[in-house]
Structures are given as structure tokens and as C-alpha cells.
Image (cartoon, rainbow, N blue to C red; front, top):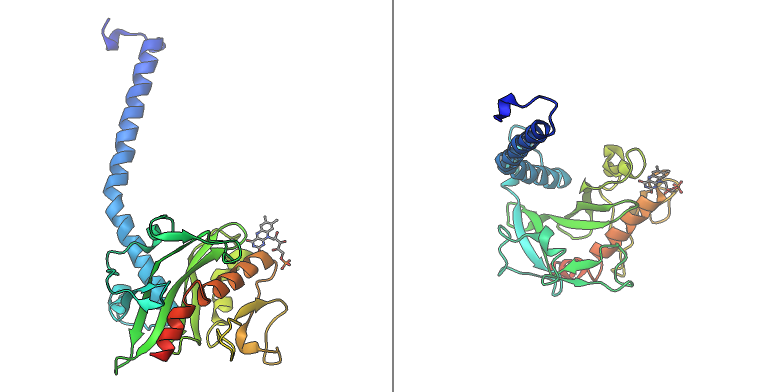
Length: 260
Ligand SMILES: Cc1cc2nc3c(=O)[nH]c(=O)nc-3n(C[C@H](O)[C@H](O)[C@H](O)COP(=O)(O)O)c2cc1C
């Protein structure tokens, strides 16, 4: 019996229609995924560039993010030696992939892993801007660490002195909106500008504290107000700053930069 002659409520016709519908839908979904992939990649790149430009406080008036990003130099740093690793091409190096790849990262001991990231990659892509004399003006360093629900991925931007904060911004996290998610609140982020990472002995002193920070707070230049109702996310942020500015992170690189 031909398909069109089958009664509508027959099992065979129901199965044929269901299979055909699934096939058509799956072709449509797969084709959309393939077709949209380049656009997604482009948007991801643009979002990353936007984050870097914004955290570095670069003025974008009258130009696009991509144009503003052109003044930023991407370089790769060897976290083990604290030197630039110019043998690794910043344009093609996939830093994110390296964070999970056992060939490109090493497992941290529980003592080392204060940021809860499990592995630390050998090479990190950093971004910098230079002044008219070619001296480093700002450093934009990738940072990440576990909050309450998720790993927060972001950038900490420093002045060329490798100590004064320009800004901290997260481009990816899954903390609760209104609680840990307040890491994205511009008013909270504004507090970071001008803070000092290291004390006179070169120890990482910058951290979040509960109860507000004003000029009467001891060591106010090293303190940022913790997020209210989100102590665990706040601790995560303090820990990631301590980790990435310390010996396992960019500490050796920033010291070398200061010396050189
Ligand atoms: C649904 C829900 C979501 C929460 N999300 C967060 C969060 O994103 N970050 C955080 O630190 N605490 C979050 N908390 C609160 C923590 O469990 C904990 O109470 C809080 O970190 C303590 O902060 P406090 O000492 O400032 O009150 C959440 C609690 C609930 C019930």
C-alpha cells in the first residue's frame, strides 16, 4: 500500500511522519549551527576585545572596539620563568584550551591552588599598551578563580608599575545575580581603580574586606569592599587576586618587568 493510502492513525504512517519530521528538524538545527558558527566566533572575539579595552580604561569615543583594540599588543608570558615567551605566537596560541590540556598545564597542589583552578598553564596571553616613548603604560592580565558556583574568568589591568590597579572585570561567571553576580556592578568595580597590589615587602596585600572601605580603613589602598550577602564569591575574588599576583601567577613576571 502506498504511503498516501495509509490511514492517518496507522502505526506505520505515524512512525514515518515522526522520523521524517525529526530528520528535517535535525538538518535545520545542524545547518543553523554550522552557518552561525563564524558569527558566534566573531562575536566572542569582539566581546573579549571589548572587555580588554574597557578594563584598561581605553577611550573608545569616535571609534569601534576593534579600532581601539588595535593599540593593544598581545604577548605571551612564560609563567614559570616570568619572561616573555616570544617563541609562542599570541595570535594563534589558545590560552583557554591550555588551561585544561595536561600537555600545556600542570596540576596544582592543594597548598598552591588557593584560587580553586586545579591546573595552571605554562603560558599566558597578556595584553599591554605603550606610551609615546614605547614604555609599557598598562598591563591587562588574565585571571580566574572559583567563587561559589562557578569559575570567574576576567582581566586585572595594572599601570605600567605592575602594582597600581586600573580595573578588574569578569567576562564569564555563573554567580547569583544580585549576590555574587554583583562583581559586574559598575559601582563595585569602580572601587578597584588606584588600589595597590603589593605591600612594601612585595607580598600580595590587595583583598576584599567586609564592612566597607574608606580613608579611615587601615591599609585602605590595599582593600576593596566585599560584596554584601556574597562572602563566598568575595573570598573567591580575594583568592584569585592573591593567586594570579603571586608566585604561581604573574608575580615573577611583574618582578622581572620592574627590574628590567
Ligand atoms: C539561592 C542562593 C544563591 C546564593 N548565591 C550566592 C553567590 O552567588 N555568592 C555568594 O557568595 N553567596 C551566595 N549565596 C549566599 C551564601 O550561601 C552565603 O550565605 C553568603 O555567601 C554569606 O555571605 P554574607 O556573610 O555576606 O551574608 C547564595 C544563597 C542562596 C540561598
